[in-house]
Length: 320
View 1 (cartoon, rainbow, N blue to C red):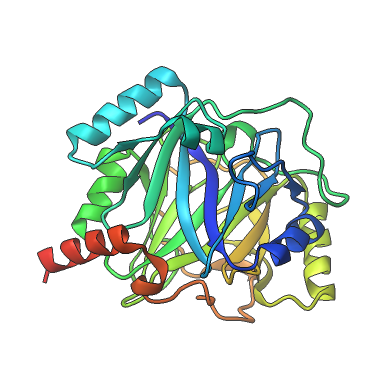
View 2: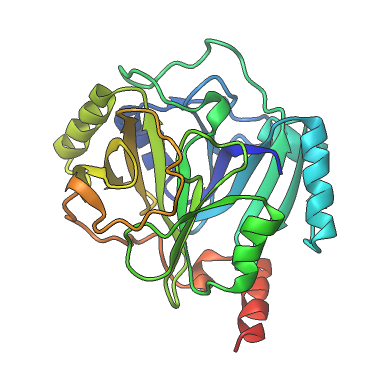
């Protein structure tokens, strides 16, 4: 599939008012205009796209959907055919859903462990329209996607790996230096970063662990780091540099309990030509000062809706 990367993420949250302050003042997001049909939700911009993050009112904190961007109409149509030929249950988005997402077309489908995915093309944008919520050098997104996401899954089945590599066409990057079963993947068109999505095996657990957010300079990382410390926001890891990427980052927790990794690229990432097996997570820094799994990671019953739970249970019993 000719997928660029993650175009947008949607969440259910009972803490939208906290996000309304945290997004602009801590991360530097711009509060975007909510669609007329969805006035109660909060939409954030990090570049000239209509939005990259959407927070919908709810009773719990959870990831609601991941939106993948196809390069264009023909690539979108080919990807939908591939999903259907692989036996994936695909639902076409109607005019109302397209308007909410700000896209020309969108379909919805689930992965084998129950997470909701969407595929779209042609999201609305306006050149030179992004205005950061605080003084900020800007985010690295545009034609690369918003960054990466790491999910926890209670089951790491062969069907999940097949779905990601054979159906979605993602490149398998490796397991990194983390403990346990973890797998990193990047989209076909991603030549910029090591991964767009990763799944970590957490028996009995599910949810979003962190989002990787790329900013344009080390100053942007440092100023965000200072704001997080000044506000006494909970942190996961201090400033540091991972072994497998030439980037500097730190991790802190958002109002919804998952972490943001704020990242700057010290030099362009390049494919290593072989699967890495790092001896340790980071070359320096990244002291663990908080939980690796925040309160956003809970039981599947607390994270998935009924349809997602049914998919998870069906695949779990298949391997029992």
